[in-house]
Length: 246
Ligand code: NAD
Image (cartoon, rainbow, N blue to C red):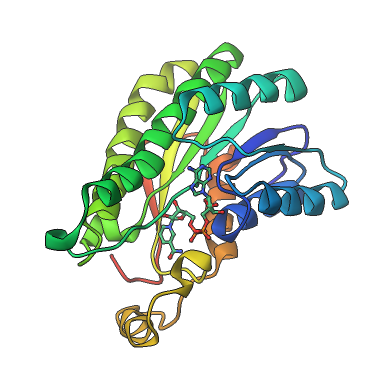
């Protein structure tokens, strides 16, 4: 896989899975727009990308805010002149059992995980349709496929991402834009660090490959979907879960 000359945007790439994706695409030759609400973390990722000899843009756009996202895409158009790959990775959890879940926990998760994907897809599609090419990869979750106690908000948002992916694949195919999603299982990142040890052990006992996944293993699948090796694949959900859901 070679991304020389390609321009990519990875949302939420200040850490975790997004950072691994940004670094891998840069290793393979792409210039990357790094986005994260944490500007400090975004700058750290950008520094690593520049040290690889690639170009990096930094945006602290909140993917929930239309104006932030609009400005981010304006900067990408001005600095990169095109966008070949969009990875909608920014995501949050606000776990709670349904009967204790506050309205704002529901709204925050739906906003970042689903509305954020909608907004970035909308502006990316405008650029990519003019180019008559593009790859959009959305990060869903295995929990959307199997359900998960305490995550009604998260699971609904990630299920929405799957449905959005399928619809956009159909809608944008005429512009030669591929839209796919990946559904990671249990991956060791800052997001899953706070899960209690007992719960972590239980989750791992449910995984046939008997371990948590690594962010780099998700990045590998994203790179495949961003590459020319997957040009005839669209509207698909690729599981990276150690067999947790088959
Ligand atoms: P993480 O918390 O380590 O990283 C998420 C990043 O998104 C953070 O750097 C955060 O600052 C950024 N972010 C949050 N809200 C944002 C916003 N409004 N605008 C821009 N950036 C924002 O989490 P992670 O585990 O690396 O997760 C990455 C993606 O993978 C998420 O969509 C997550 O739901 C999904 N996922 C993770 C796992 C897992 O086990 N870790 C499993 C399945 C899916």
